[in-house]
Structures are given as C-alpha cells and as structure tokens.
Image 1 (cartoon, rainbow, N blue to C red):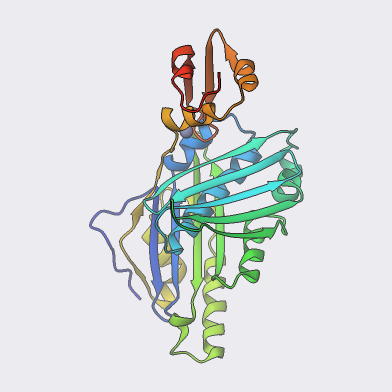
Image 2: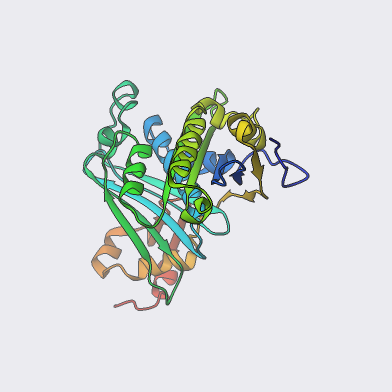
Amino acid sequence: MTVIAGGAHARLDDLTQPFKIEASGLHGRLVRLGPALDQPLQAHDYPAPVAELLGECMALTVGLASVLKFQGTFSLQARGDGPVRMLVADATNTGAIRGYAQVTGDIPDWEAVKNAPIPRLIGAGYLAFTVDQGPGTEPYQGIVDLDGATLGECVHHYFQQSNQFSAAVKLGVAQGHDGHWRGGCIILQRSPEDENPMTQDDAEEAWRRAVILMGSCTPEELIDPAIEANQLLYRLFHEDGVRVFDPHPIAFACKCTPDRMGAAVAMLTPDERSEMTIDGKISVTCQFCNAEHVFDEAAVAALPGRNP
Ligand SMILES: [Zn+2]
C-alpha cells in the first residue's frame, strides 16, 4: 500500500515513470510531458485540434517506446486522406522525442473534431509502428487500419491484432491557460510471465481491475502540473499497492544536422534544385523542429553525388 520513491527528488515533467501494481504484478508506465511537448508544438503554427492530436501521438510514442525493449528509434506514423495527411512522432531509447503533422487541407472547427479527431483530421488510412535499431538490423514494422474515433481507440485496435504485446492506454493533452501544452499517457502492459503464478480467471480479473483503475484518471489529472507522477499513481492504484522505479528523463531533440539536410539536397535532381534556388541559395526547413538550413552556391557545389 505504499509508494516507494525511486529518486530523492521527484521530477515533475518530461519523464517516464515505470511502476508495478503489487497485488497483480502488472507493469505500467506513466508519461508526463511539459516543455518536451510544448516546444515542438509551439515551433509550428498548428491549428489547436491538430496540435492536440500530435501531442497525443507524441505522448503515446514515448509510452510505447518505453515498454518496448530496443536500442534505437521507435516511431508511430498515421497516414490518411483527411486534411492532416500525415502525423509522425519518434522516440529514441535515450528519451529524445520529436514529431510533426503535415496539414494539407482545411481543419474543421473544434466542435466538429473533438469527439472524432481521427476520422475528421486523418480520415481513412493506416497507423504504422516501426522500431529501427540502426544500420545492419531489420526494422520491425506493424501496420493496422485506422479504426477508431480517437488515437487511443486506434491503438487498442492494434493491440487486439498484435501478438507482440498486449496493453491498455490512457491519453491526455491540453493547452493550459498560460498557453503552454502539456501531455500525459498511462500504459498498462500485460505479459504472460507476470501472470504465471495466477489462474487464468484471476489474471483476467486483475487485468480488468487495473484497466478500470487507470480509466478512473481524468485527462485533467493526467496532465495537472500540481500532481506529481508518484502522487497520481498512488491516487489511482493505492488499494492494490503500487511500486515505482527510477524515472527516465524525456527531452525534445531533433536529429536534423547540416550534414543530414545536405544529404537530402544532394538527392534532388538538377531541375528540383534550380527550382528551389532563391538568390543563389537553397534553404531547407526541418519538418520536425522548423530549423532552417541554408546552402549557398559553394555549399551546394560541395555536396556529394551532385550531377552538374
Ligand atoms: Zn530538425
């Protein structure tokens, strides 16, 4: 019935907090995002419903990345035929996250979007889960149709079809009165090893109960900066006992560098290049962080693999 604190100082924001429910042995993660979410969302001028959906996608990506055991990058991508053509977020095993939304059409107003952001914003399409462990490894990819009104429902649909793992998810993202975005995610993970000592009925009952307790968390509580991660977990699961482990820090970080952007420019055809050249310079903006990388004539000439 106690919370065993992992660190001396509780970190308030931008963390993944692993926990275990003592009575059932079920494991979970609580993700709290403040500046790590606010920064990438503020870097773009997204309409509010798009920023909220992208925020959910990023919070979910952090949560899923932390339950998967890998070295490298986990990414979640939704593509469809709606006004948001693509939504993408990725997280590394070291806690760097980023994401962006490609908006190609008019975004309906908030009232029209709020109960069904997936069909209204993304439309018909698919959700892809990718684990990339770097050069020389085979990336894992799982794909499922976008089937659900919310991102949470779509990901449940994925879990139902997946034999990789089973999990339940709760998401919350909102822009505070101060204008800053905050986000949160709780993931409960179901694994046969944890349930071994229990009968199937008991394991089923323990799972059902944990999902109900998680579901009792309101979106406001999930992102409330006044409630610490440990406090929130205690509030939700204290009747069954909850143990917390060392939290992992999360930060917004983009992988774009002049070299990587140069490689992208080097792949353009001569026609594409001349189209993009303004005042003798090619300027490329990173979709994730909005940073602008400028290549002047000399820099373009120095790029590898250029056909004159
Ligand atoms: Zn970038």
